[in-house]
Image (tube, rainbow, N blue to C red; front, side, top):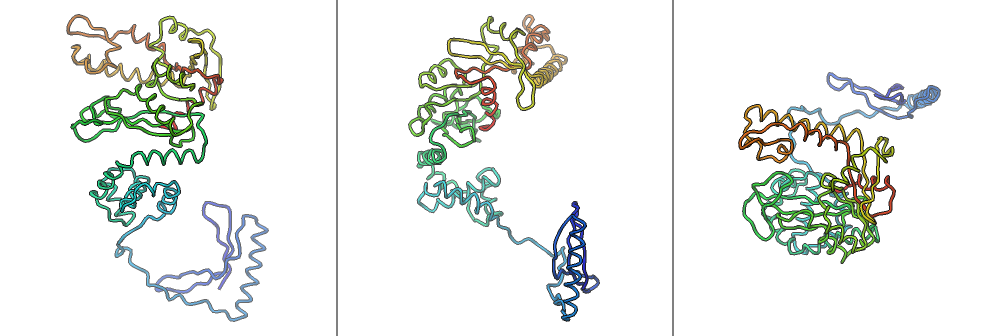
Length: 423
């Protein structure tokens, strides 16, 4: 037996131990009899060493015999095979949360456990239903076939309203009303070309134009809590989803005095009028290049811009009154300028590559992004229009937000910037 002072790797701390060693085959194995303490202070280490020496002397005086290690024979690592594994942490934490939120009461049949298992598998590793079945078997030790998952989903479809109500209840439980709501729309495609009342061909955000899809509208609070979701036919324009959703969600949750934050896809005169009629405020990205020529000139003018700082980033800001109660907040940042410039240069490079091979307009017709920088001469040839490129470059770094709120420019920008929460 002996006193050992062991240094911690990647640390300045030392641990004082009383150890003993014995030979095990060809190796000498060291075991800890007693741990005295840990410190990074030299005086404390010396004191612990003194205590360890005194304790060691008492052990020797009492003829203490360390227990012989007659443990398991050291296995050959090459002979080790994994038989199975089970992930219990996901169920212990997220499973408990799932139950507390009341989702375990949506289905009454045996499919209740199937739904919970699939939801937890999606948290662990988002994937297809077929892959979810495999994950449940390998990582949760649950034998749930793809057919069972589909049967569960058939039943779940009949409880669609119950799911949404439970989402509302969970959100209301932590907030009596919502003063800020982020709204976004995406598309979900199907691996089929068959259409029905919901699956339709439409503009696909993930570029799957050869398959049918649905449009999913979603809203969250500023902390990411779900307000609601709604499915629309795949050929529904994004701009037509906002008011429909709000009118439906208002039946279940207080969103009357709410600021709606959305991107420019939500920007339409009809949406703004209906939001105002509901007494709601909005912060929505504004398509400045579609503004009137007079407004465009005012935006591009250097006059009235003031300096500002947000999140340690310097920017320029200007406010323009568009109508009686509408404010257009314009910002300019060099970081956004570089990004816009880089994206345009990449696009022009691709255009010139195409034109270098053939000046036929047919090479460009399929891409509207190319067309805006091109002038068509006659029936069959085209060339890069430097004047259009210069006009487009004038907008680099600029971003517009339209609002009817009385918030300061900084508060408006902060709320819009947090739109990433729903993304």
